[in-house]
Length: 265
Ligand SMILES: Nc1ncnc2c1ncn2[C@@H]1O[C@H](COP(=O)(O)OP(=O)(O)OP(=O)(O)O)[C@@H](O)[C@H]1O
Image 1 (cartoon, rainbow, N blue to C red):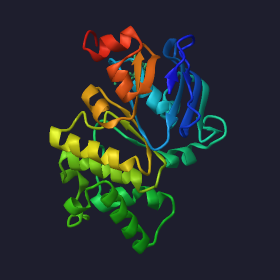
Image 2: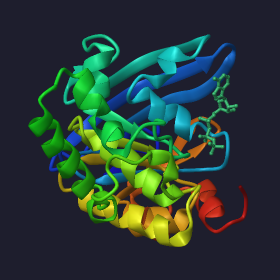
Image 3: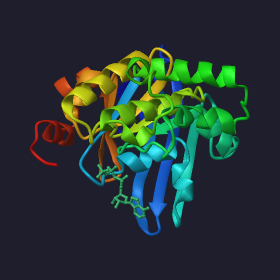
Image 4: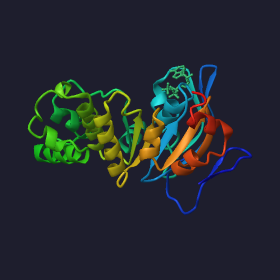
């Protein structure tokens, strides 16, 4: 992957497989231009991190990948977001999109239901009723989210009684239950202690074998630890996008360097 400095367009490397191809993406909240001409390809089966100071558009951009911004009044989006070549704004219905692109939020947000019912929620909505099939999905999802051993004896207890770190892994299991292809994570560990954070990071690295992961993080060490590629956002623009190792060791833009060395932000 390399940055074409002339127009800041990120040029695709033909040897890589891309899950998302985003071009000329502009997003306005009313008169406010929140995303400015974003061009980016997101690699399949990798972890891509978005970093940058508060308010620079990271979450807004993440949410364009599963059309969460559609729910925001006065939000106008131009440009293209292709998922495996299909335009998600023109040629895909939102339900299909949300099954294919799941999301995990900053604050763990389990439903006030049992552990089992949280994980079975999506599959039930998708029409799966058979108990044996739901049992199998619940176990598989909790195992994938590395929390089966901790929860297998309390499947029918309230999810609200779990620790924050357990709730977040349960939310990941709930996302995995509908077998998405992409998992968007918006600062998934910012509300967690270091041990739970480390569990979620290990989990993300394990999951990328089967899923494409895109993660907003304020924690630069986290981006270095877990991500393969990193995009640095500033004031609604992607300033630099590269292999994580390269971006952090030899940033090509002075603004990236200033940010990662703590000179601003
Ligand atoms: N629903 C909205 N209506 C109007 N403006 C919004 C809305 N959501 C976000 N914004 C503005 O868009 C800009 C980008 O916000 P966004 O949440 O994407 O930034 P961020 O980089 O994720 O910030 P943080 O790291 O603090 O979460 C900010 O100036 C924010 O105030």
